[in-house]
Amino acid sequence: MAEGSGEQTNSRQFVRFAFYKVDPSWRRLAGPERQAGKGQFAAIVDEFACRMMVRSYSTVGSRGDADLL
Image 1 (cartoon, rainbow, N blue to C red):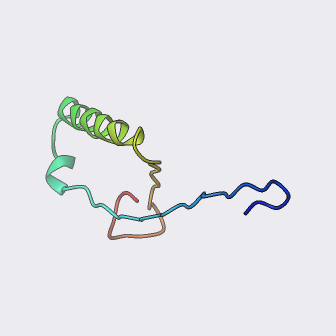
Image 2 (cartoon, rainbow, N blue to C red):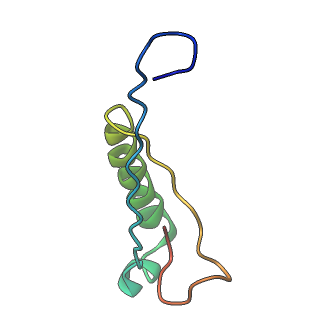
């Protein structure tokens, strides 16, 4: 219960961290094809952003076996 308000707060946050590695064959694609892939990935992330909080983090310099957190 929140102090003094008489209301019960139900603010829980569940966090899941997932690490992803980009397929090396994607890096060998031509520039326009990579741009199209980035656009598709962004569209999928945006689709889920309305249902849950989505945050991405770079792993540059902190984790060598993954490209995206």
